[in-house]
Length: 467
Ligand code: BG6
Image (cartoon, rainbow, N blue to C red):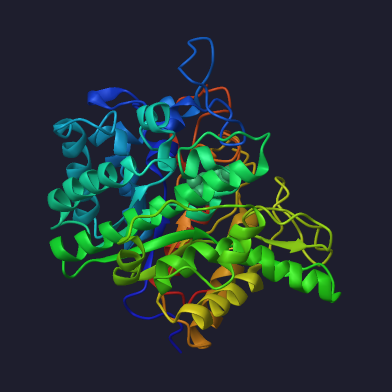
């Protein structure tokens, strides 16, 4: 019995800032991600300090090695490859009158290479890499100025790549506005004032919703056949126990994430939003046409990442999003060395939860296991743990498909080792392909196939029947 649809988009996903390197090459401007020394858990520096190590500056040198890297992906049989365009390669400060031709040419070549190798490019327009100049000048998305600047950038890339790219996404993990606002919304916050902090987060989110609506419209005008989705971090949230307060709290916490997809997919602010705004004294600045635009141009599909599940325990403050460990450890689950609890059934649960809520196609654009890998004397990497993790999640995706959930595809996160967004480390490896580089930046950058490479190749070759 065939469990996966014939046109299922099997593949992998990376982000420009975690893979490309070449951080100032060919006219690229400084992106906010270029100022992060230890990854996204710390706020960005205000300028590059020559005495410090910044992982994104070289990353895995995908900028120069993408042909070799895509060859590995082709060998695994990828039907799709997700990456982002670094906005600062196209408009180095975000405000130039004309785009940077060298940056445009790079993505032209990259997408052409993907197509040549049988992969659909799946492109994120903003993956934590807003030009830093826009943070300095406007505090990022707190300002409406960014709406027009983002529209201009998107129009430029839509027109340029309209014959190459059919799958787009606006903002990576937009709900991470709560936990990593400097990455998700390019805003720096005053941590000492909670109400003000939330005001800025929701104002920036509102501006991003308007931008997303306009860009969705633009995308359909320029590419009538293309699809453009929103993208959220939607790892599962459970109540810690059957105590009613745990259950209600888990729902409230979940809403802090679903708030974003509620607006972007349903085209309106959800009924519970006013209560949140009242609680924190938030008054959003809007223009008259904002809500009509949001209603008229919703996202076509919901792209999301799923890595783990988390619990809500009564008494915990509900402020953040739902992508991390928040409550007590779930005693029924194992975890990765980074403490991410492994929950394949949670993925089936989330697929059902999201389709029940939105009735729009889902695209699992991130899932995978970050782990330490060891290279043996004969240059092998025996990563059975990664095979086991991925296999169990794919089996649950097959179950979700049987449940009737339309899932467009699965792009495994980091099919080649890249810099971790959360910690800036190289040793938190996700790849089916190993990259010889350590946390301090030492290594030859040599690529090696892991055992999981051959396993995933088999999965795709059999359209999932080998699982
Ligand atoms: C998602 C991000 O949050 O998770 C990626 O979209 C990130 O950019 C991925 O790399 C895995 O997180 P980490 O911290 O292990 O790199």
